[in-house]
Length: 512
Image 1 (spheres, rainbow, N blue to C red):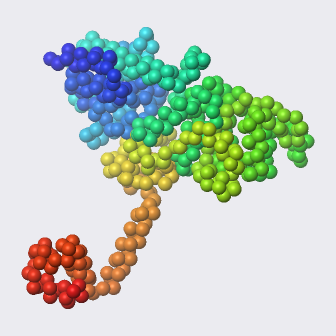
Image 2: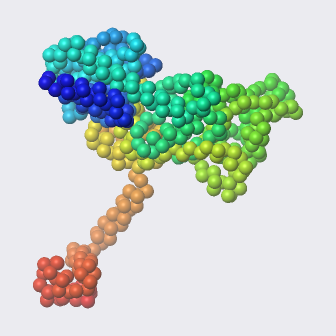
Image 3: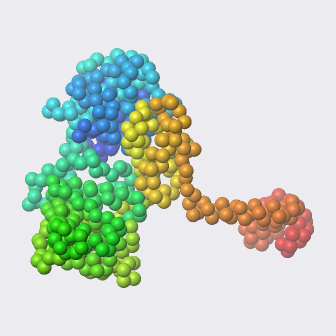
């Protein structure tokens, strides 16, 4: 208690310091932990009826990847609705959102202290601070007044960071002629992760979003190219209009032109009425062309014309229709190589690559795997209607060591499948996922190592014990002899045997 003023002073000074949001929030939780002697705490932002963890202490890192909709979490809903300090009874039957997620604790917290602090600015909820202790009545020594001071400081810290981020974003990305644009939060479209690769990707998304530039998103299957397209649109000036999706790989050649540009009645057999194509449906908004590398050369030429002149021609119609459409395209192919091989038009390629964005593979953002796993576990928990789904330490090690050929999509599918298996094994409402719930594919390197080991084992099985021993001794002597620059005396000293015995052994083994 004696250090309260000192800790509060640190928080106030941090408000005027040039700290990143992460550092500011981590220091805030550290000070709160020093004052309250709590075992776990979390700072969460609030938007669209959802809490998003920004910083944690005493909880597993996977919590940072989870998103808590208040209708699914009674404790968090109580905090959001209260408008003041909420002290939950030590034996509260309300499920805890952090069940199975407390660091250094096996199982769930059945009896513990839990306090929720809504963070308010101008009577508006912007976040919450949750504080947990392993003992009953752990925070009874602190008055509501003490906790309100903490809440006020935390709310000011959070609001300061949010305002600074908004200001930086506006100064960096908004054109001066459009300074009245406000960014709409889009919780439905979010990239999870804080790795350097993800920071670079988010930076590129922010730079290009509020322009009308054509964007080409490339990356392996399963990395989240469609999600990136959604983010670019959601943060653009066109966000109030639709983003229209078209998978070019799923287009039969016979209907591809009609799907893109529409057709008039009688244009072909079966055309019984006028029909708008994707370009017209996306007028004023965004058209997302997924797997654009699969378009035929003929259709590529028609697409190029639409990009160049901003007009389209319906199938069976001689007149043109003006359209105002932003194009975002995506591919898992190396289009530059396709251009060289004549499979993709060079002029269209240059039109599409005005602003290229590469989405990193999951293996190149290993730091995000734990967060993503927690994010998918939280989503799966709601689908399976269980109290909690947590990930064992052994599983997290395995997940981080895996090479993820299917990227983020594979991780999500594997978490879902493992949770279903885990649920089938127990009647407990608290699921803990283990490595044996997963089926990991071996990488090419692992397969090669396995094959080499199998061949070596086969070779050894065909040798006698004496020949195997001779082979081993020969290899050791040759390596040591080479290491000592062909000096037999030095070799004998390193091997710890008599020089004469070494000479006789080397001669018998054919080394000399």
